[in-house]
Length: 273
Image 1 (cartoon, rainbow, N blue to C red):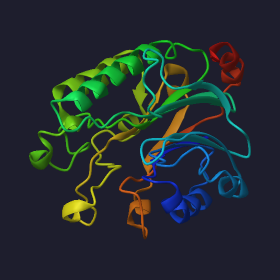
Image 2 (image 1 turned 120 degrees about the horizontal axis):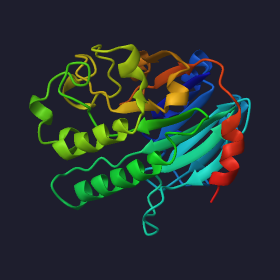
Image 3 (image 1 turned 180 degrees about the vertical axis):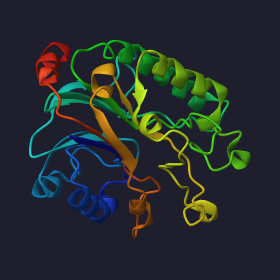
Image 4 (image 1 turned 135 degrees about the vertical axis):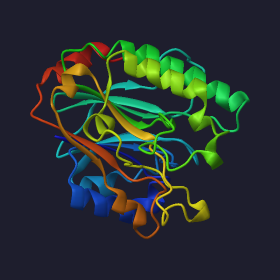
């Protein structure tokens, strides 16, 4: 089973890129972020024609997340993170697909920092950590995939150079400390696990010719609970997608799990809210 995450940076404007990648890569499950569309304008029919059932949580002009499943319909278990009923931003969606529980997330960017946007990022991260703690020990495979807006380290595997990014919210000690606390629950970073030290970037800013120079960051991650980590066989980044015409500034990241059990579909029922 191939599970991918892709920040499309506006789904309706990127449909040719998204559909071409879906046809070429054939992922079984896809987590999309930054839809930048309302629920009503989500391109459900085009995705169904491409062979994918979909769940989505849209938001006009900003945010928005979706889960796609090849040849089936994701079974929704959660819409939005618990912990703040006043938070209306569309950043988290969770569903069971073919025995795997998948959480699709778009963690706040947090810039400029310091300030209220960075405070919101850290507060949202705390809610994610609390919710992840309820998932990590499930017997079924669980994958938390998305744009985490965190560069895990200053190593070349995570960022080409830190000079122009040192004040960015993605690199701040508080962001990285929250990331480490999340992993310490028992989650495995799929790409770092199979490609330690390799610069498999997932984001290249449109500015300063960063794509042609491969001046990228690794901010899109797939975290696996121990049940999923035992099934991990491959992981990578489809970086060529970033070079397509009218591409997103992100490229899809993915992981392949060997045949998984079916327990997540049953577990989904008791997680429904």
